[in-house]
Image (cartoon, rainbow over all chains, first blue to last red; front, top):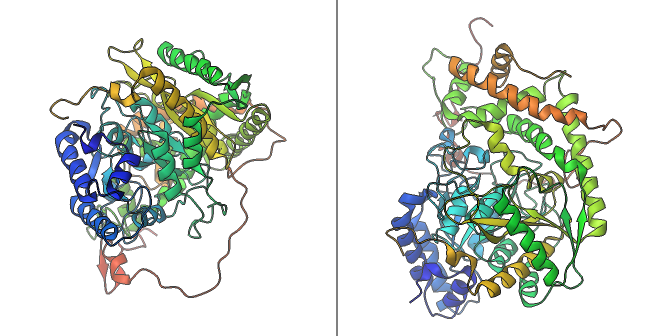
Length: 507
Length: 100
C-alpha cells in the first residue's frame, strides 16, 4: 500500500478535500517520516510539530464545517529558514540569529496559512543564502537523498532534500543566483524561480535585494505551479512587487502535460554548454532537446555572448548588495551580542558580534562587496557589473525574438561529494554558471528533472533541464517543463523520483 | 586596472565593515579574495562605456502610500528579541570611545 508521504501535493490535497484522509493524518505521517530520516538528511533546522498539527486540525474543522478550501489545503510544506515566521524561530542558517523569534509573518507565509498549507518547519540553508551546497550552514550540512555522501545543492538545500527525501511534498526556496534551481536539479525535483517581483519579498531576509526571489519546489511541475499561484501576486508591503495578476500557471502545467509542443520555439543557448560541463549532464540535456523536437517544438540555436560574463557580474553585484544589507546585523535590536562587558564601546561590540556570528563565506562576501563599492574601485567593478547586466538583458531580448523559451542544463555537473569544493570559493561559485543570467535579468526559469547521469559518479544522479522565459511569462516555463515531465514519465513508465534509492531504515 | 588585494587592504576593509577578523582569517581571506578578484576582473574586458547600468531587473518607479497612521508592531514584541532592553528601550553600549 502506498503511504501518505509517497503522494504528491495534488493527490494529498484531493484526499483531504474528499475526506479520504484528514489533514492531521497527513501532517502526522510527514512528521513521522522526518523523525525517521532527518537524522540522515539534516534538512530541517526547526520542526514545528505542534504548530503543524494545530493548522492541520483547523483545516479539518473548516472542511467538516462545509467550507470550500483551495487545492493545497491540508498539504504539508517545508519552509526555508530565510522566511520570517511569527512565533517560530528564524535563523537564516546563521549563528547570529540563533534563537531569534520574529514578531511577524512574511507575506508569503500569511498567504500559505490562508490557503490551509501546513508548515512543518524551517529548512536548512547556506548562511544568509550564500552558497551552492548547504555546507555554509551555521548549524550542520544537509545531505542529498540520492546519495547521502553528496550535497543537496544550495542555498535551498534543506528544502530540496526535504522534498526529494519525501519529508514534504512541497517546499519554499529562495533564488538569488540559482538557489532554487540548482538544488532542485541535483536532487531530482522541480524548482521554479519566478519573474523578479512576481512573489513578495516582504519578510524574506535580504541578501541581494535586486536579485532575491522566493519560489516553489515540488516533486511535480503541477504541484510547483499550484504553490506558485498561492504565494504569487502584488503586495503593497514590497515596493518592487509587480502590480499584475499571476498568470494561470496550473492551467499551463496541465496543458503542457496533456498536449505536444507544436508551434513552440525553443532556443538552445550556445554559451551554456560545452567545455567544463560533465559528459553525463550534456548527454541527458542533448537527449532532452531531441525529445523537445519529437514533441513538435521548433528548436533553434541562439547565442548570448555576454552570458560568459554573468559569473563575474554576479559575484560583484551580489556581494556589494550583501555588504550593505547585512549591516543591519549590528547586535543592537535582535540576534547575537558579543563583548558587551562595559569595557567595549558600541563599534567594538558590533565588530566582535559580527566576527562571532558570521561564518567565513559571509565574511568573504561582505569584504568583497565593501571593496567593490569603495571609491576608486566602484566604476571598475560594481559600475561595470551593472552595465554587463544591461548587456545580458539585451542578449535575452534578442534571443526571445527567435525563441519563446530558452533551454540549458541547470547545472554544469551533478551533485558532488560533501567537502569536495569547500576550500576553493571559485570552484563553488561555478555551480551557478547556467542559472546566473536569468537571475541578473530578472526573468523566470524552472528546473525539471530530465535524466540520470551514470558517467560522472558511482551511483546514478539526477540532471536538471532549465527552461527560461521572458519576464512575466512564467506560464511558458511550466508548460514546457510539464510536457517534458509527462513525456519522460511515459517513456520510463514511472515518475522520475521512483528511481531514487530508499533511505536506509525508512520506507 | 590591476587586480590583487593585500593583507593590509583586507584588514582595512574588515574594519570598514565592522568585522573583527582574526590573524588566521586575514591570511586566508587575503589569498582567497585575491583569486576571486582576479577572476571577476575579467568583467573589465567588456566594452561597455556607452551602456547604461541596470540596478534592477524590472524598471521601478517610486512607490508612495497614503500618509495614514497605521498600527505598528507592539513595543513589547519588538523588544522581546533585543539582546538587551531597559526602560522600554533598546540598551546599547556606550557610543563614544575614550579616544574620540
